[in-house]
Image (cartoon, rainbow, N blue to C red; front, side, top):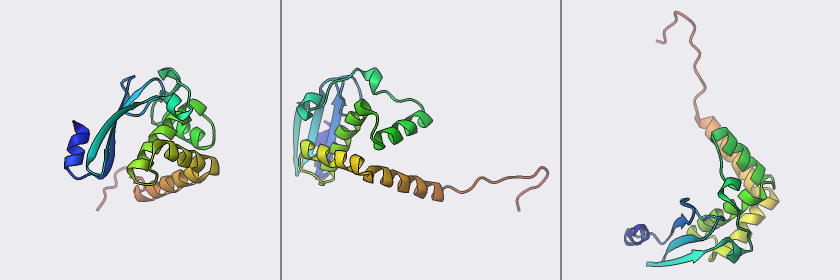
Length: 150
């Protein structure tokens, strides 16, 4: 239903996904239902990690944590570690690349995502994003006791 709404609203490419484990992303714990909007049509299908040469893993191996933990996980993945979690990232990055018309199929997009990680480009982009967001946040103000701002 959501994909049909996106289609009727004029989205040219979009994905609505649901993992069999209840995650709102493409998962590697089992199958994922994908409703893909492409050029005025909605096509619904199922994918499994094995369709892309990836192995299934229990949800405990891909779960994150708080913001600090998740930041460490992201840095580890983009530095070439975290193979199981990296597979989830590859699948979902692939969906973004297809939705953004940078690739035509999930299989082709996974190759692009993998290349981005291996080449260091993904980490470079993350560092640029962090620097940008930090430059947009105003520095903390320090107040001295008894002093009021004008």
